[in-house]
Amino acid sequence: MRTELVVALDFSERSEAEQLMEKLEGLPVIYKVGLELFLATGASWVQTLCSLGHRVFLDLKFHDIPNTVAQAVVQGAKTGAEFITVHLSGGRRMLDEIDLKLAEALTAGQIAGRPKILGVSVLTSFHEEEWIANVSHMAKISGVRPISDSVQHFASLAHDHPAIQGMVCSPKEISLVRTKHSHLFLMVPGIRPEGAPAHDQSRVMTPREAREAGASAVVVGRPITRAEDPRAATLSILGELE
Ligand code: C5P
Image (cartoon, rainbow, N blue to C red; front, side):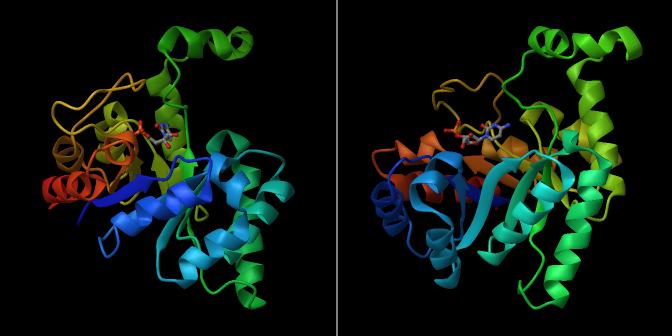
């Protein structure tokens, strides 16, 4: 299967996003809209992108009570976004509710299709010590778990649940998840072409390495958005993913 390229539209202004998209016109990429841009543009802009034929990954990482997240996912699906993220730590009941509400919305004709729901396990910004400190209140009951244990736990939850089609995972976690869960769609940020600066990403892989490790899609932001020639940078990454 082909590894897709997701371009992270990490901008605070709609005009900046549209300028970049114009430069990448016609290239086979998916656009990631995160919280910053979404708050600047709103759902109607995302809907317009989708109606123009763009593929959109709505990365809003929902985390709330089951009913609230499920209703938000349905609203996200109404834009036509192809991918939507939720935190897997929201638990099984939250996932059940997403499944139910999407099915109801589909039957009622409120959405044209089901988006792929991707689960976020442990945010890749966590370092091991910080993660352990963060969950230490649970340690008294269950013992401190390293990040890899938590990722495997969430991967099993994602694998077994019909509401979830994939996960966001760091380059380091691809093989851990891929070996056990071959059908999950793995969306992988932390990607840097050979020789590009890592910025604040602590564990990076090249696009080719991520493809070989089993990534379904790679997410690339600054190496494209800050490139002198974003189109050339995108074409070069697409070349590595073939
Ligand atoms: O500029 P850069 O390529 O580092 O951007 C990566 C994108 O992927 C950003 O939008 C960032 O928020 C997102 N992301 C990430 N790590 C995660 C989840 C999302 O870097 N675990």
